[in-house]
Length: 359
Image (cartoon, rainbow, N blue to C red):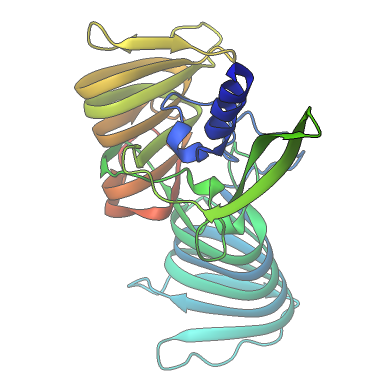
């Protein structure tokens, strides 16, 4: 009888949906495809943004842009003085500017652009590199769809479906985010709907036949759709790089995870007294159980990940440094000249902070 009760208890435990058993602490290993722990692909870039694939690429901003491949490229000069310089190589002759000043290039070849304000849309198979020039800084918003990957300078390749919105700008950066019940964006399917998971449980039955006890074991498979967990934090703010500067979280209800990547190991973290602290196997430290708390992080080479119900704070980078960020949740953020940018509760926004001085 005791054996049956024990087996039944184990079966019931296995049958409980994993969402109900989810731990609120940070999980290891790190599975974020934008994290530095991602498997090295050997693909890097010296450009502010490198995009390569098949589909569509749209960039609205300033600086230099080199587009090569085969398809259709539409270019519009948004500057007041008409300073956009377009150098085609291999594409067919540009069409006459349309009613909205759009020029159209078709075929196969390369385009080199340099200007203070323009919009480029590429459809087809392409490679695009955005970088600053001698006259214009590289800034703006990029969007990608289709099949391929993008790389922010100093980062790793990220598939198109996980990098729909990309912002190139400068620092400092401030966030005001909130949210509940969201899962990390890279665990979601990139094609509509929730993620279908399989839960298995083992059912052990006991019966007596011909005076002998016979145990019958079978596996029952249950499939269901993930549901949002309203008890989980839904706002995310990451800093990669490693970043150099100071993070001042004026209000945070959630947890913070930090990695010290500096050569001098000079990371300094200030948290309220009594904060739960956990050191994980990879050397990172998680500060959890924060409720409306104030946290300060400073160093010359660190990574940070905030998961919270509510978070407000700023990041002031060291002048001349570069950092990459990811923002998701309800609310907005500011970064350089970009203000009141909606983070979005689905794909979020990837941000490249190219310099430590205000735009």
